[in-house]
Each structure stands twice: as structure tokens, then as C-alpha cells.
Image (cartoon, rainbow, N blue to C red; front, side, top):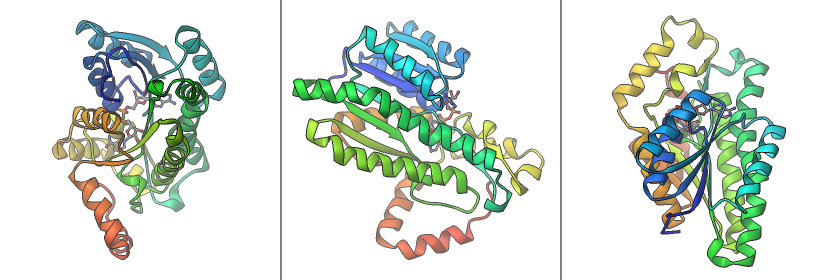
Length: 278
Ligand code: NAD
């Protein structure tokens, strides 16, 4: 899909970080944006930024982990447009702590948002995209699922987060193989360490939670790394235009992707050596 002008693009988690920048970059390409976030204030800010540049954005407050809310959202949107052209399943939260310190509440919360949020996005919006593509090949759209470097590399501090992102990776690969016959593309985006507000809100457990100022330390580590959400957003738009499959983003993500591919044994050794972040 080379020309995004006039296309309908839905972004979940559009109220901050990678989601906000992705929505802005799609809007600059002339797309109509459907912004979804649980944070109404952040989501409206994104819409204002888009509209200030002459773009179009519709704002919806919705929890992606809530199946009923996502069903109602899809019903509402499909009353206005027959199908999305691009679906970006981006909403997610962070979680860190050694497995023995993790609570079942954290497992449920993170998997409900990071995995089931993506499942809900695909479940409620993909059928109309498939229907459109079947009747007109030119209407074939694209699905972007945000996994992570932690979607193929699992350090000991990230058992919950890595589980959610490995699952999104697997779902996306299966989906890509499934809907290719309709001309619909699916990309698995795997960002590395990106400077966004996610680290300030990351659920911390065990030793990570006990260390004073851990959120500040994480935020300053991510800031020093200095890879911006805008850089990720431009790769996401490129992935749609070129129908890319798996897309590591940032040098550390590419590095681990190739090490895992060609020297899988080294990866498990490296995982064991990783010290608690930062
Ligand atoms: P962020 O915190 O800046 O933005 C995430 C957005 O998702 C927020 O606006 C938040 O309100 C929204 N959100 C959270 N829970 C939600 C829910 N239940 N329903 C609807 N919206 C919800 O974080 P970010 O860094 O931009 O993260 C975006 C995605 O990128 C996430 O899936 C994250 O796991 C992934 N990712 C981030 C990094 C990184 O280093 N920042 C690296 C790899 C992957």
C-alpha cells in the first residue's frame, strides 16, 4: 500500500509515545486517523496535534483489554466506514521483576492488555478488512502488531512482558501466513529501547520495586539511549508501504535478531548474564 492518502488508519495506544507518533506520521501521509486510548487526555492531545497540521482524527476512549468495549467500538466505527485500511495494535504496558516475585494479578493485567488487546483489535476489525479485500483486491489493507525486542529475546527481568511480546510475535506470524491470500499484510514491529513514558508506568515487582527511584533510573537510561518514538513511527509506515513481515527497530533489536537467528546458543548464555535494568 504505497499511497496512504484518504486511508482509514486506527491506532490503539495513540495517546502517548510510539502510538502518538505513528498516528502523526500516518496523518502527514494524508490518512484519516481513528485514535483509541484508555487515556482520554493524551488521546485528545494527539488529535489536536494532528488537526493543527490540517489532518483528520477521531478520538475514542476505550480499554483494549475489554472485549465488550472493543466490540462496541468496532460496531460504532463500522457504522461510519465499511472497513479499516490499516490497523495498528500498539497499546501496551511494561512489567519487570524476577519470575518468583511476580504476582498473578500482574500476569493477568499485562497479558490482558499486551496480548488480548492485540487479539481484540484483530478479532473485531480484521473480518471487515478481509471482506473488503475479497470483493476488491485494491481494498486489501495491513495490520501492524507491536511486539518488541523482548518478543524474541527474554532476559530474566521480563518474564511477563516477554511472554506477552513472544505471543504477539507468534500471533502476527500466523496471521501473516493466513491473510496473505487476500493480499492483506501483517507486520510484527520489534522496537528496542525507545524513549517513551512507558518506563515511568512500568509495573515493578521484587528487587526492582524495592530499589528506590527505579522508575527515574529506568527513564534516564531510556533517555540516554535516545532512540525516539518518531523513528519507530517512520519504520511502521515503511512496513505498511513495503509489506514487511518481522521488523526489528533500533540497532540493539537488529543485533539480537541476527544473533538469535545465527547463533541461538549464545542468546541463552547472554540472557543469563543480563543484570537487572538499568
Ligand atoms: P507509552 O506508555 O508511551 O504508550 C502506550 C499507550 O497505550 C498509552 O497512551 C496508554 O494510555 C495506552 N494504553 C495502555 N493500556 C491501555 C489499554 N488497556 N487500553 C487502551 N490504551 C492503553 O508506551 P510506548 O513505549 O509508546 O509503547 C507502545 C507499544 O510499544 C507498547 O505495546 C510497548 O510494549 C511497545 N514497545 C515499547 C518499547 C519502548 O522501549 N518504549 C519497546 C518495545 C516495544
